[in-house]
Image 1 (spheres, rainbow, N blue to C red):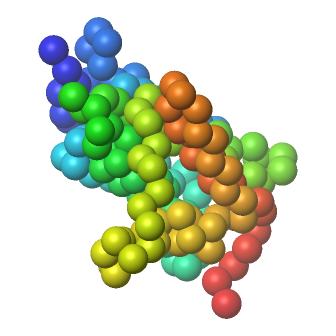
Image 2 (image 1 turned 180 degrees about the vertical axis):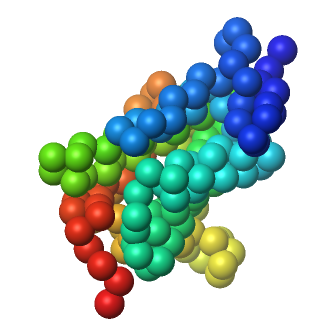
Length: 163
């Protein structure tokens, strides 16, 4: 039993699957399967939420969406690469209107893979964290034995205009 894509591209809630919250102050997707298809769906849901609830300039919108997409992709692709089976990830966003601050958290229950020596890395890989750091105002990555939490924060979310 898992999440089923319902009308409007949203997940229908089923036991032990995905829970949804979509209002201006919060976005939540819980227990999303950490696979490419489910990650793409939650990324699309987040983009729709962002577009629906915030009037952001094109650059600001793209920065937020790309950084969040990267965090989701990293969790889906790498959190369970050494596990016998795929796990899940959670994506949540909290917007505080008074401070105009958005914090997005991506959690997994996997293990952060060990750092690969530079001479063995592919040239086109390993740019996700620097990209998130360039696009968000603050990035925190907490690695624990129970999983990894990536928190991306933007201050003055709606106040910054595109230059």
